[in-house]
Length: 507
Image 1 (tube, rainbow, N blue to C red):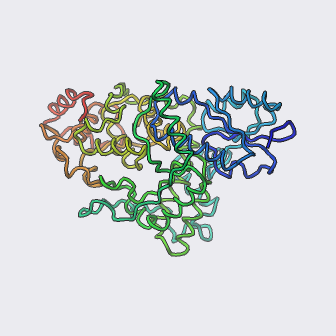
Image 2 (image 1 turned 45 degrees about the vertical axis):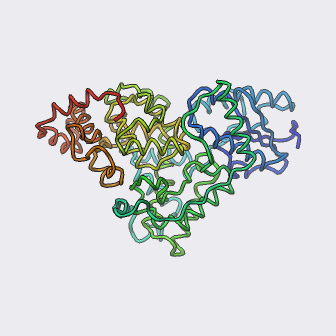
Image 3 (image 1 turned 180 degrees about the horizontal axis):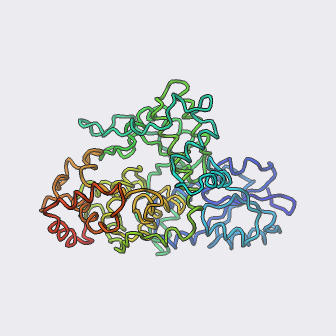
């Protein structure tokens, strides 16, 4: 199909690749996909992330066939201009769903294309704004937003009340991993099969690297995450059949030999826009109605998508473009050490940090507890610069975009916003990691030790962090107990000196 001035064009960004972004088009309308190759030179992405994004774009173009015009250009601006010039159309004939970044929104406004409402989330920006206005001066709490969305959509609701009269099953979803097992013992997830498109993408990435154009971090291949809508449906169905029932109890646990655990592996395709989140929510809710999954697991999964994912999306806009760059309440200034930036897990002795970095190096992914309570906790303790840390998470995680990581890293992991997102820092010592993972068993360090050659760097780092920021936490009732504990530590000066000497050296 050849574009013409009489046909409408829908432009799809790389995170707008599912059928719900084109469902309103006429069969004669054209779909434009622009691969902006320059974007891969501006950041040091995980190679598996670059592969997945490109694979998804080329697969979508292949699915659309003659309806699709795919242009490779240095920039999006160049791609749109070339499309308009080559096919005799104007930017006004092109529509696009509102992009997911501030830069993207400025771009489409500057180009003069028609901008539609954003898609791919349960709540619209207008619905969030209305809810926020009703809060007055109250905090915009995730739990309240989640309950409001449940009530509005009717998900897991009966006669205007939550199913079984309970909104939240977090108390049932905090089990540690089984102590006598190396894995949860579940079947391997359904994995996608690479095809000729993946081969072409890999050759393209190889050529970029060999020419010195682009530098990546991490390993790529075989592709582990869905790159099409059909593959995403397979991943969703596999999760519901094999892992949804155990998702709730073990969603906060981690095991060295089981990087998937009971998680869905849907975050990457969801954030590529390959599937509508409401489709995932409906399928999981149906499993509960059929009696195939317990309510605590179903509610926990739905909370992650309808509650947390939507919440951080809306906060990205609500908190403003300078939220990341202007947030550093704890005055954290340490640059990221090279071993951290390179995902050099071989140089790390601490089992929790080594295992977590290896998961990210090998897959570009880890589940939320490793992100928050291992990697985020380490960055918080060590005082890594919030902006640099946010950029690192955005670059190395396969499902990460600026809107995903702003509130998650700055607000939750690093407490850099001083309490906008969380009422206290998510800091923890080795005892938490020892309870919720099996990482500590083979470790050269002891989670109960804070001083000496076998002192756990996470445990010692916790008290170093508390001591360094004690003045900032005065008056925070949720930090009263750690501050009292600090005052009782007779070896605190030695612990602080030990961790000061450790500096940026890999633990």
